[in-house]
Length: 434
Image 1: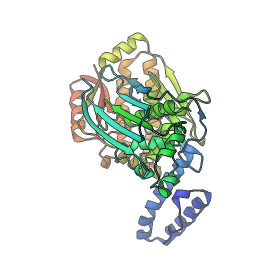
Image 2: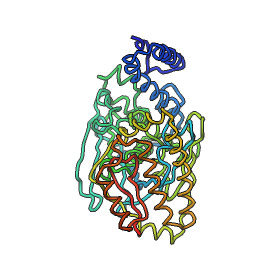
Image 3: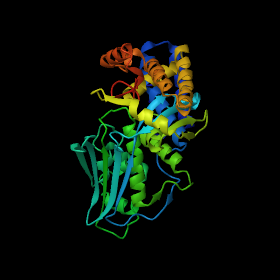
Image 4: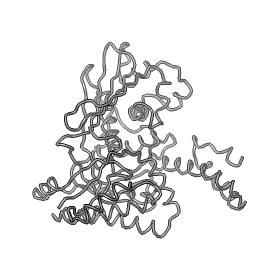
């Protein structure tokens, strides 16, 4: 009853004021059931506020400021590929709202997997087609044999209606189209039965071509839930490929890297997976780099500084850095929710850990920049301990098999350190062999 007047979809200052006033009433009431029920409303409001902070506009995640360029020739394929990333230290400090309130710093590496860029997107305009064909592919990182694929045909606006569900088929591709302005969210909900064709022709700057089709294919050579930034980096590839194909200039202000990093952040808000900015920085900007974010600046402002590795340091990393897939995928969104709830409590343990994460990112950069590869192993192990504190012991962040494996490898003195990539809970284990 207390929350019936709250409209999260049109979240604005008056909505925020209403939520604060209701929160006070609930807390004064000392009614445990009311407090428990209202928690869901507060978490939804927090998510809406985070979206607003990222986009700084009422439409949240729709592209507004990019300029037009010439679309590609009909039938010509745009191919975009990118490396994966290994986070060395600082992860979770990049996640809104943590990065707004505290400031974030993450050190990570862009890496090839089996000497290949594992994340790819293709897009082309087709004459003689109708609608939009979306396809996702999962391939073997060894021989690129097709392991799994999913296709979706977009013929009406209703076919895009589940774009915000990360479990729906081709959700990332659907969200990228919505983000880039193919159709508004309101149109999807209000005019769902409308044919997509008129929207497609306008989107592709081909209003005089009646038999126009658009084909978008994403491909990953990484295991599902690898923790190596796959979905975020792939999102950047997909956005870039579509934009180039249909004539949207993403580097209109001369800063492509910052634009695409921010675009992926907004894309993930549309997709409801949330998350921070380190994944896309890790794979869409090459080599070793330090990503940071300004405190209390809206919309989010990220900065990236690259640090070229000395040839001998790069050679040693290639020899000693090992990736092991645990066989257990995970969706970072689940652990993310736990981290945000723990951050909301602001315990001394969490605050100390966040300080350690930021410091660890600078230490990792200093170690590799100075050629001290052994020290990076120590940074990775300390980082893993920080990740576990941020997520909490009951989050599933550290599977028993990983705990036992790291203990055995450490006891036998065969590694200098290691960490599960990304949020943890499964995915790939990065270890530095001795």
